[in-house]
Amino acid sequence: MSATQMQLGDVAVSIEDGIATLTLDRRPHNAITTETAVALAEFFRSAAERSDVRVVLLTAAGPIFCAGADIGDMSGIAERTTLDYRNGYTAHTKLFEAMWETEVPVISAVGGKVAGIGWMLALLADLVVADQDVRWTHTFTRRGMVPHAGDPYFLTRLIPFRRLMEISLLSDGVSGSTLEEWGIVNRAVPADAVVATARELAERLAVGPTRSLGMTKQLYRRALDLPIQAALTDERASVALIATTHDRAEGLAAFVEGRPPVFLGR
Image (cartoon, rainbow, N blue to C red; front, side):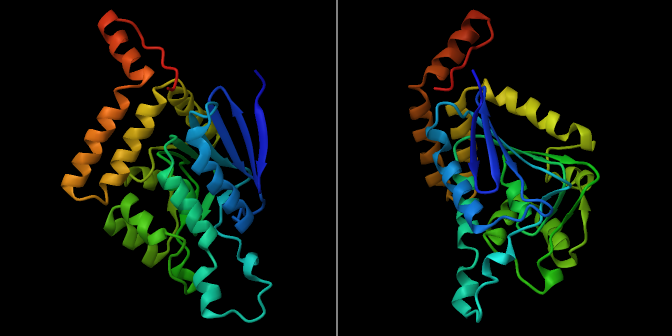
C-alpha cells in the first residue's frame, strides 16, 4: 500500500504502515508560523480517530530542528498593544495542548539545534531521540523575554526543577548527551543515527496495542494534575474501557497460549 501524503503548513506528512512521519521544513530556522501551529494542532487532535495512524514520528529538515515561533507573524502590526502581545502565541499554545493531550504515541527525532518553543515541540513527545552533539538553548531570558506558549506549564512537568532553573536562567546551550544524562531525553545518539533510532521505536509502537498505549500515556499525564482519589477513579475507568478491546483479549490469549500477540490497534 502506498503512503498517504499531505501538507500541514510547513510540515510534510507521510503515513505508511501505521506511522505518521511529520517533517517540519521551513529552513533555515524551522520557526513555527501561526498557520503551521493551527494545522498541526488539528492533526494531533484528530490523530486518534484515524485508523491509519498508530504512532507519530516528528522530525525536521536541516541543521535546526526548531528555533521557536516565527516572530514575523506579528511584524505587520504597526503599534502592538498589550493584548497583541498577550494573544500573540495563542495558536502555538493550542498546538502544545493538542500534543500533550493526544492519545496517539509520539516520538521526536531531534537531529538539529533547538531554541525557544522548539523545546516543547521536541519534549512533548512521549519518547525523544536527540543528536548527542547538537545544542539546545532556552533563549527567552537571553532576549529579555519570559517563557510563553505554555512553556512554564509543560516544562515544569518534563524537566527536574533545578535543571530547569539552570537551563532557563543561565540560557547556556546544553548538548543532547547532557540532556540524556539529566533524564530529559530518552536516547542521545550520533547524528546519522537519530532518525533510524527513532523510526525503530516507531515501528515497535506501530504494531503494539494502540489503545492500551494511548490510554497509558494519558493516565500518567493526567495524574500529574489530579488529586489521588480523582487519579484512582481515572485509573479504574481506563481499566474498564480497555477490557472491551480486541487487543486486550489478544494479549491475554497470547499469554495463555505461549505465543507472540498480534495486535490490531483496536
